[in-house]
Length: 192
Image (cartoon, rainbow, N blue to C red; front, side):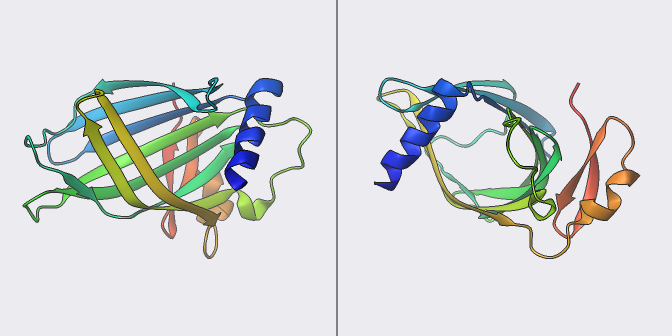
């Protein structure tokens, strides 16, 4: 029942309101110096009520030995609303390759752009920054269908404690955004 309600709501957003969302992630692998950019445009629902996403990737990633899996630990990131219709995040993580204990660090800078409803109530100040916890990362390549399958379990909640950007966003220079990283803030350059 809950899935049916969610599908109807998403259908309403995309079909009647013309809602859109774009996602961009810049991922930097420190040990190898490699970088990749992922850009996704969410295009609405198809005739089977599956969300259509156009994904484009540019750059290079570290090689994973054939037949080995990678493990990404549970992830926590803080998403900061930097302007109407835009969320930004920066966070550091690591992964290990099956059979090794070597931590491979990487950094992710994310931008979510979306259409906000002009008639909606203003976003409450306590919701300007939200924490997202992601666990149970599942990534597998299905050779027979030549497709990557990806699934996660996530939870979004208000940031615990004080939002460091409330007091420090004025310290960021023009063309940059204040984002929360743990208990601190960081100024990151705007795209463009």
